[in-house]
Image 1 (cartoon, rainbow, N blue to C red):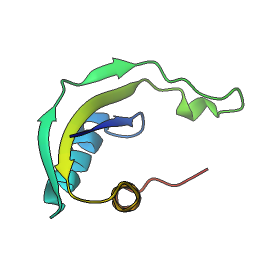
Image 2 (image 1 turned 90 degrees about the vertical axis):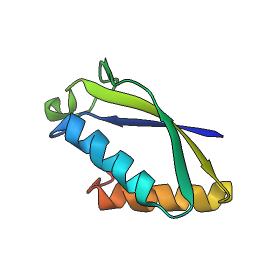
Image 3 (image 1 turned 120 degrees about the vertical axis):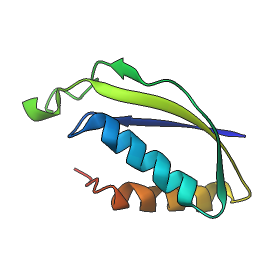
Length: 89
């Protein structure tokens, strides 16, 4: 069993979490077992972060099962993150 932490502080936060969970559930080699309740947390950011980043996060923990290697799982999750429209800064 693997535990993933998902979080978002931009846009429609709840919709973002729902979409991320849907993408995980649609993955043919990932089985979502449990999803925690949604928690809100303060953004912890670097000093130089723009003010637009200072919104509270919505977070969930997700337990999954998969036969993917850790490296492949990481790559596939990064692909899902890109599908969500996340851009690296």
